[in-house]
Image (cartoon, rainbow, N blue to C red; front, side, top):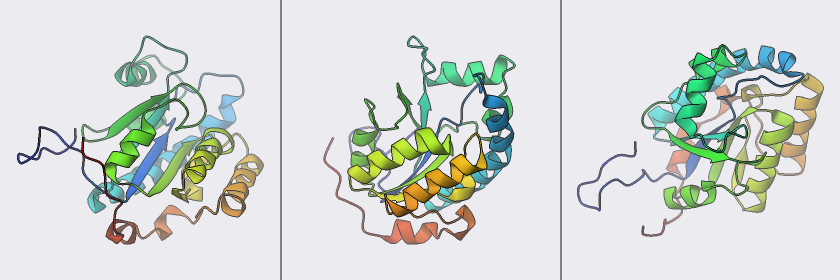
Length: 208
């Protein structure tokens, strides 16, 4: 949950110029052709977990942006329960990246993290101007989300060791597009100086 500030009205989110997005990492991986993707996501998940730990230490908010898998009557907790308890292919990744109480979450109906979601509003209120995108699949949801972030004038970072696609070629092509077309930073997560992102002057957030 967001930190409590007794001088304001109830709960308010922390302000930060950067945010870490974990896209579709709580994923049952039960769809045609997912076997290869599932194999690639486990080592990716460990690297995201380390990046998430560093982000938390730096005071960078962590936002899970997850597909609802067509379960229009479910919420994010129901999605987590399904992946952890129903014996699905994506269970190991979900256990590695299981959300914590102070993480944010947004459900999305389509590929992009921004399309018909509350992500824009949340990022504006947090004062974010830089988004760090991680998760799956690199050539679909990550690429589409990076494109929408770029069109909204966010600085885009996509650590190449923290995204995965069905094949290496597809992943490499998506990263090339993000770097060349969307001007994104695709260096490995271990090379990111998270404190430098936090030290930047955050965008002034609107009053609630």
